[in-house]
Amino acid sequence: MPARVSRRRFLASTAAVAAAAPFVKAFAPGEPKEKVRLAVVGVANRGGENLRGVSAPEAGSEIVALCDVDPAHAEKARAQFPDAKFYTDYRKMFDEVAGKIDAAVVSTPDHSHAYPSLLAMGLGKHVYCEKPLAHSVEEIRLMRHAATAKKLVTQMGTQIHAGDNYRRVVEIVQAGMLGPIRRVQVWLARKPDVGKKVQPLVPVKFSTDLWLGPSPHEFFYAAHAEHGGSWPHWNWRYWWPFGGGTLADFGCHFMDLPYWALGLAAPATVKATGTPLPGADNTVPGTMRVDYHHPATGRGPAVHLTWYHGTPGPDDGQTKIEGFTNGGVLFEGDRGKLVADYSKYRVLPDEFAKDFKPPTPSIPKSVGHHKEWLDAIRTGGQPLCHFGYSGVLAEAVLLGNVAYRSGRPIAWDAKAGKTDSPAADKFLKWEVRKGWELA
Image 1 (cartoon, rainbow, N blue to C red):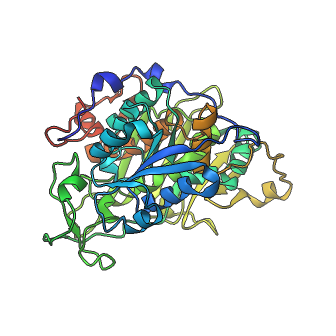
Image 2: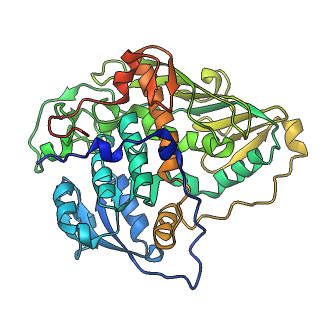
Image 3: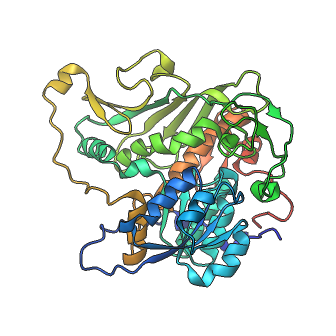
């Protein structure tokens, strides 16, 4: 039976949604170390990485239940945790183990993020959910409110946030060493690695109906040599019915840095252009530019942030920065610039860099992105990427796709949760199968 989640229980005023609990300090020696009992939904590929993270010896967890629509795909996880009960349907899992778990980890394809997350939160369970949190802006807002209303500990799977490099960049920016920052450019050279026609149906040994979940669309086979025409356990992200393309895949990782460093609020306007993949029947853009205009906050001036993918540098590829052609974030301050990726940063230009000395580190080293969440469950508070913060970031990322698909610039009213265009508003949510409505 399809799952229904009450909109009345989860829809929120923006004021309630925006409320954010403070970050909890790292777990200290001598504090209680009771195990957090977990159900894990999606246990291979990225789900396998999350399972490793939450089950590491230092994490302090117990894996009670595993769920994956494809039993064969889940063989490694099942062998590693033979005492965990295995399910192919998370609805049945939550029905049976709700009283035996404290929290859930959700690593399904994007189109199935919101449903298990909302079911778990409706049961009062803490949630770790992969980026970009959900498949639509509407779903993200439901998840943000559920977390706040139930006072749950949440974390979005943006594991780069736990790295030392991002922390050093945030310290430099927030110390004002670059001067006021009004311009940020973010780029990723990577393009979608699939652009072929969908292949005819071939038999599979699991329920495609369960994989589709809320999606009313036909399932498909990506014609990609790596997958041999088999079920697209990865390349689903390049079809709108299931994912949001390269922007949804990487935007939360790269845009996390300026959102964190500058304390950005929701964008006021969004404009997006792009080039469809040639010869493909999926419609996500192969190259893309999104311009976000963020209002001034108490922490700084208005910021124009541009996202590019399919280009090796800022300014739509006209400028390349040595060592950062695969991807990067460029902060442009009145006194100097800084470019960073996941693992390194550099200040620019050379005359500014010559006398530059970074501030003394002040942001503590992370205990690990997964352990931050588990420690917070035990001790109270919230990890850094709780839904109150990461939901605003993820909404902005998906608004880039809303603007692209609507074919026009949009003004965003974060309080009302709508744009200035009914034509664009229809892309804030998506069509789901009968019986799967969040209503």
